[in-house]
Image (tube, rainbow, N blue to C red):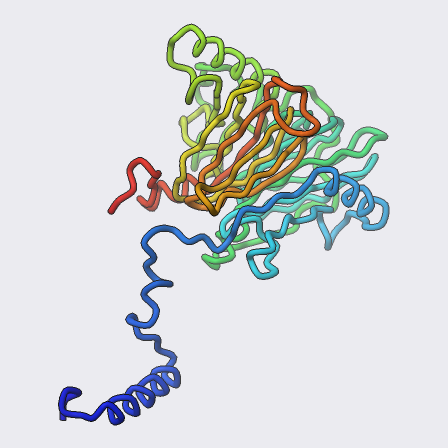
Amino acid sequence: MTSAQKSPAEVSAGLARLYEDFAAADMVPLWTARDDLMPMQPTPRSLAHLWRWSVLYPLAQRAGDLVPVGRGGERRAIALANPTLGGEPYATPTLWAAIQYLGPREVAPEHRHSQNAFRFVLEGEGVWTVVDGDPVAMRRGDLLITAGGRFHGHHNATDQPMAWLDGLDIPLQSYLDSTFFQFGSDEVTDYRTPSRSQSELLWAHPGLAPLGAPTGAAAGTAGSVLAAYRWTATDAALTDLLTVGDEGRAGWIEPGHAAIRYTDPATGQDVLPTIRCEIHRIRGNTTGVIAPAVGSSVWQVFDGAAIVRIGVGENAVTHEVERGDVFVVPSWAGLAIEAGAGTDGESGADADFFCFSDAPVIEKLGLARALADRAE
């Protein structure tokens, strides 16, 4: 007997039994789950969220007074847990962000892991991260790269504490069941404090590649051959880009908005295979706009103050942000930044923002879409 030949009561009872049997067999019919499986556009699990540096740093200081660094805990890193992710210690479904704090003369022991990592320094100097035996100085505005599989530890050579932003692909690798971890030395392998690392001596010369130096797989890492991107060079590049834009030549993303993507000098690719790092400068009294796109990102105010609007239309959220604040831009949300605005900002002052995202993964999977080119 077909469904057309059955009474409504028989069909209803049959469906009830069918769904019970589906559940017992650990099955879910597509026709009851379509909205969840294939929405009309991305419906991110993580929503926009903001962490204030005025809250983050004092808590990191308190942890520095109470929580030792050593084998086991490994790092005094405090994850930024987006409350929309159900208690997971993740900023977005693919990105992990944390504030790491190292006290005076402290040492974080060496280890390595499959997760790709970077450090971005908001304040201070005096810590060296030792990556595969190469001591790399950490200073305000510097971006430090540690690709997966490289041994690394940190030592503070000063009598002052230091804190910075950590970013890793922990959520992505956890989802893929691809994670590995290995202890190294209980301390670090080199306590020297050189102003420039070996990687910088080799690779920090624009347009000049050393002959015979290993790259890529030969270098034992999928990340950048350059371990440190210094603020002096970054600041100069942003200034020059705005100047070129003022002269009517290419240089702007849009008027008054310059941005740089950090790249591997040996390949031109992203500094990490799963994480893109950028820095944006937006001229005071100018609004910079990032169109909605597939993929999530985490932003930190490096300098200045601004009003940021995350999302579009009635779902947008607006925050006044200042130096050190960290916020999430979910997939397909978009972002507008009005520089030189906010309660603690100097009216008309420029604002700088560091940003990291999962864009390399999105692009490699062929999933990159922005609002202007959305596939119907």
